[in-house]
Image 1 (cartoon, helix red, strand yellow):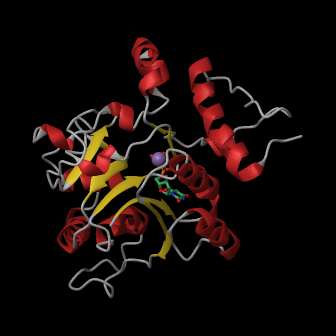
Image 2 (cartoon, rainbow, N blue to C red; image 1 turned 135 degrees about the vertical axis):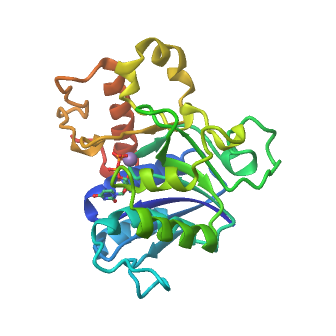
Amino acid sequence: MEAYITLLTNNSYASGALVLAHSLRATHTTKQLAILVTSAVSRPIRDRLTAVFDAVIEIGELNSNSTANLQLLGRPELGVTLTKIHIFNQTQYSKVVFLDADTLVLRNVDNLFGTAANGSIAEGEDRNKRFAAAPDAGWPDCFNSGVFVCRPSYQDYTGLIEMADQQGTFDGGDQGLLNSYFSGWSTGDSSNRLPFLYNTTPTSVYSYAPAFQQYKDKLNIVHFVGSFKPWQWLRFADGAVFPRNTSSKDSITLVQQWWNVFDQYIGGKPS
Ligand code: UDP
Ligand code: MN
């Protein structure tokens, strides 16, 4: 079984997870949709999730009781980082495409499952890749951990926890840890590297505007990184997003696309 999986650690990203799921359904994906939730996610939110995800999976806190020989108790700062690591423990799935809850899928990306994961190989061919991800716009020798393809395995799951326990994470989050663990990513087999079009951050609209103009019709997955998420934008009564000081026309368009999915499947257009 193969699945798209996202993660919800609290209620505040719930609309992100719902929009993501509906955006995936709209691509007529043939894969399962699953979401990992912590105990902090409320019952009403879970009911909404159940309506669109095939599986809502509760994950517990990782601590030294849950995983042998690890001294994670007394390291609360690792708790949040390790939450995403639960993906590697979902061995009921043979292959997973993980997506942050602040991503939006614009076209069918099921080819991420069938192939070398970068979509360049004929559908159906399976190179059995362990891990694939797209470059981070801030430091392209690192991958961005908001979108990745993996094969869940207990070995990687415990290996990641062990590494977190022993050396922590260089950026304080899961991205640093995953980059340390899959450290051959930038120089190894090119099929581990997904095109940036599978994890396009709207911040690139400013940092490389001509490239955005060239490629904007080819985006597969948009990732709204940063502290200000689409669901936090104000809107006019007709549903148009209220431009923020710093926002360019193109980044507004992407946020508007997120809201269009919200309106169509979740909220209904304001009247
Ligand atoms: N997350 C969550 N609630 C939070 C923070 C994070 O559910 O309060 C989950 C969610 O899936 C989110 C992911 O963890 O997409 C990573 O966090 P975020 O996307 O905020 O990081 P960024 O991509 O901005 O670096
Ligand atoms: Mn994110």
